[in-house]
Each structure stands twice: as C-alpha cells, then as structure tokens.
Length: 300
Image 1 (cartoon, rainbow, N blue to C red):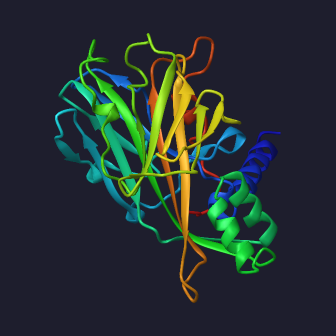
Image 2 (image 1 turned 120 degrees about the vertical axis):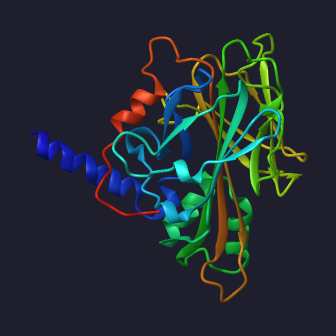
C-alpha cells in the first residue's frame, strides 16, 4: 500500500537519524551538477545521512551562519540570501558568471545538541575514530554513562564553471581557513594521469593527526569506498577516484570542561566534488530528488 510504504519509510528515516549525528553524520552540499555553464542558474540541495537514510537536511535557516562562494581569484560572494531551506524544488538557486573552480562553503552554528545512551555513544565514537573522546571517557570512568555533545557542521563543494577549465587553476587545493577542513593536494577532477589523490585535514590551520577520513561514492553511498587515518602531518592518500560524484568527510571533537552543557564539542566537515556521473549509475542529483520528501521530524 502506498500510504503504508510512506509511513514505513518515514519511520526508518526517523530511527536512523534519531539522536543527532550518531546516525546522520554525513552532511554535504549537492548541486545538480558539479560542472555548470557560466551564467546559468542551477539548484543546490543540503543533504544529510547515507544509504536508505539519505534525506534533505531539515536544518533551519537561522542555524546557518555562513554560505559563501569563493572564486579561483579569491573573490568571495555571500550567498546566505539565496538559501531557502525546505522549498520543494531545492534549498538554494545559484549562478556564477565567472569561469573557474568555485568553492562553496557552508557553516552552521554549534547550538545543535545530542545525547545518547552509553553504548550508542561509545559505538558512535568508535565508528568515527574519535579515539581521544573514548580515552577521555575511560580515564574519567564514564564509559557506562550517557554521552552528550554540542556540534556544528561545515560543508565544502567544488563547482566547475565554464567549459574546458578543469586544469586552469589550483583553487581546489587551496585552504579556505575553516575550523576543520579537508583540502585535496591535487585537483581530484583535474588531469587523470595520476593514480592517487593526496588529501590533508587541517584543524585550525594545522595538520590534524589521527583523524578518520572517509571517501564515499554518492551514487552508491551505503558504505564508504575507502577509509584512511591521517598521519602526523594530517595527510592521507586515496586511489584517484574514477568518474562519479564523491564525498570526503571527517569528524573531530574536544572535551568540554566539567559543568558545561555537554561532554564534547564536535565538528563535522565534508568536501563534495564530481567529475562525471558514473556510467550506468543514477546521477547523485536524481538520488537527491528521490529524497526530497522529509520525514516528519525536526532534528538539527
């Protein structure tokens, strides 16, 4: 029955995403295409979750502190006024007139709050590679206590504007200066004569050691394609991704002082990019449209 199917789908999504980031850590900017014509208008979606739990993000506009686009020459466009989260057809409509690699960046505030039972919180820390937080819980004898965190999200996307410009600038490899940032050290969609994609994770401008970095194909995102741990300089290396739409994501946290509103302050960061739809696979934007209907909940 269609009604029963819709109710079941909503319940699955609610259960998968309940409790905040433990079930919905993936958050990213999904343009209709990662390569667009100069002067054309195109839609963008804010997506969260993965696999069967992927959906439009229900984040309210007032929680988004920054939404900018940075051109290859460093020009910054403030795009907050172009956001309209929750509209049926998209979450933003954008247009760039200058050719080159544009970096989109979105940052939320840190007022989202998550609290989980001890077992689920420990599993979440383990799955995200947040060893520092696990060690802190062991050291303070709180492995059997509920865990809580405040968190924020940072999302970047690489959008190529204009034909024939893939190798004309190095914007993809330049840091923006975010609190937690994924920076490819080679343009992931530039020349295809390389075999690897070196990536660096920066935390407040410095290389972050021991972070778990995941690479996911957005056309088939139930599980990451590859997982790496950053070295002492914050670097990790992946095989060069083939054609498709891709997501890199990382999580980091720090303990808050005793008596604070939560145990930890966590930042989730992502980088989305696309070289071409994978042959024989549905385009990631098609999957985004399939997730347009929101479940009836009001999480972060």
